[in-house]
Image 1 (cartoon, rainbow, N blue to C red):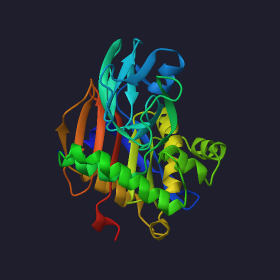
Image 2 (cartoon, one colour):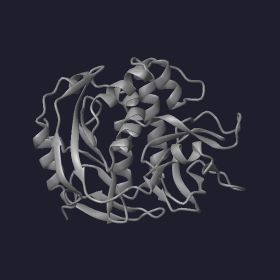
Image 3 (cartoon, rainbow, N blue to C red):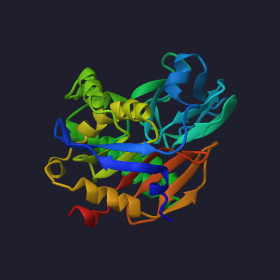
Length: 300
């Protein structure tokens, strides 16, 4: 079913922007619904109202425990980094943890060479997300119900990025690999994102072209600021020079077909059934976040 258009009364591209070889079209939207009671892990953790720890008694690479001690819903997004405890991880798929509840959520390791506490036993929020190529691979494996293959695929992708950048990390830590070769300062990235408040971006130049959308502008600013570091790190020069009609891209998204998928916590989840990879998450009936990789034939 075609569901994306149901969440917006307006969705249109803004003038193109460029940063460090990336071509970005900010997306302006009027979103239906109300996400007033949704907070990020960063926001609630800063207030002492959220906590992330290894699963007690049986710590595993692919699962951690999230505690939401607030009266609001807690959001962790697909591919978002979280650091500390026994090893740094990324959130495998978007989750919304209900108020005053605790839940085990799926993660994957992005620091292969460490399995020990090296400071706080709690996880902390991080300033990075996985690369678009990593997420594209992961989304495909999730769609194929090959969850067991995701971890090795993520380690392979991190090794490829390490070699591509000529970076080195003793523990093969994705965050360290990105940081050691960071071309644009964090301050420049924040200023870039804040120049054009929007609900998402069409991104060209880092893996396959893709669209990423958020149900609130502040969610977009918060998570895109984390993501751009990795988009730049995994820049593909040949694709960064491609031209693409943003209206054509949005038309592909609006015509794409989606089906329900199994949730982890209180969220509702849909996955794309086209030849491309895409996932979106809702809180009740309200759109929170989604991404959609454009079909190969649409830009070749």
